Length: 370
Image (cartoon, rainbow, N blue to C red; front, side, top):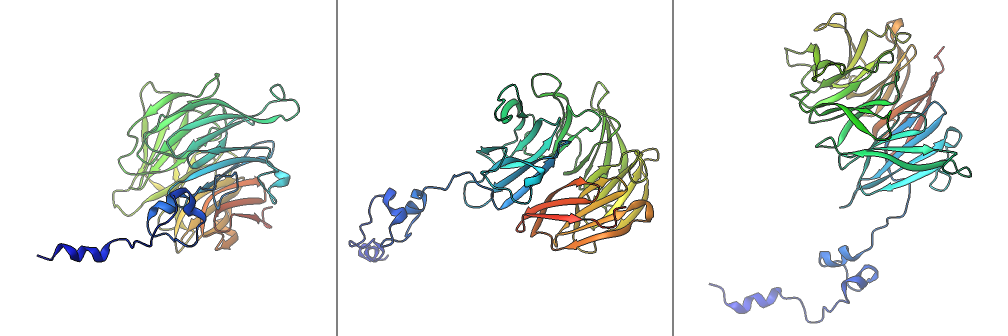
C-alpha cells in the first residue's frame, strides 16, 4: 500500500489562489483549470439571427416568417422573426416587423391564416401567434399576441402542415407517431383529432391536399404510407403502400393539387436512396413509378409549385427542380447549397428559397419555369 504522503503530489499548489468565481470570466492569469470559471461566464443572450436557420414560411401577403436557433454549447435556444418580402435579402434584428426570443429551440414555423403563425418549439409545445392587428396597435400593426398553446405531443413536433382548403386547420406529427389535427376557428388552439400510435416505425413525412381539410398522408422509415380521414369518429387510416421487401425507407411526402403535376390523386414520397415514388390513392398498395433524383444522399423535402416539383437533399446538400409532366425533366439543379438544408419555400412561380446551416439562405431563380 502506498504511503499516504504520496497524495501530496496531486494537491493544488498553495500559490494557486484564484479570485471568486464571478471574477474568473475575464481573468487571464488563472485559466480554466476546472469548470468553475467556465460556468461563471455570462452567456450572450442578446437577440440575434443565429447560425442555424431551421424553418421558413410565407403567407399570401408575401410576409416571411423565419426561425433561427443556437445549437451549440449546453444551452440551446432560438428566435423567430417576421419580414416583408422586400427585406428578405437584408434581414437584421432591427428591421424585423416582429421578433420573439424563446427559451427553447424554434423547430418549425408555418402560417395558418395570413395573420396567424404556428410555432413548434423544442420542448414539444405548439403555439399560435397573432402577428398583425390594426385594432390592437394602429401605429405598429405587426405585433405578437399569443392566441393559444398546447403540449399535445410527448416529443418535439417534427412535421407541421396547414390545410390549404381551410387555413384555420392544421395537422402536426412527431417522430414517435403522435398525430394531432388542430382547429383555430375559435379563440384558442384546440386539438380536434388525436392519434398516439399512427406508425410502428419512425414517422418521417406528412402531406396535405389542396382540395380537402379532412384528409392527409403520412409515411415512415419502414416504407409504409397511410392515408388518414379525420371525419371518422375514431382514428382511421388506409394503407397506401407497405414495403414488404424492406428495401424502401420514406423520408418525406407531398400531395399535389388538381392543377399541379399529374392531379390531386397522386402523392409523392421521397426515400433514403434519393428516389421519388408516386402513389395513386385510387390504386393503393402499388407504386405508379419511381425516379432517381439523387445518386448520393436522401430526399429531405418535396415542394410542389404548379407543374414543378422541387426536391432537396442532404449529404451533400443539393436542390433539383423537375417538370413531372415532361417525364421528370430536370430544369434546375444546385450543388452544395448549404452545409445542411433544413427548409424551403416557393415565393412565386419561378423562385425557390432554401435555408439551412452554413450558407444560411439561397435564392434559386428557375429560368425554364414557363
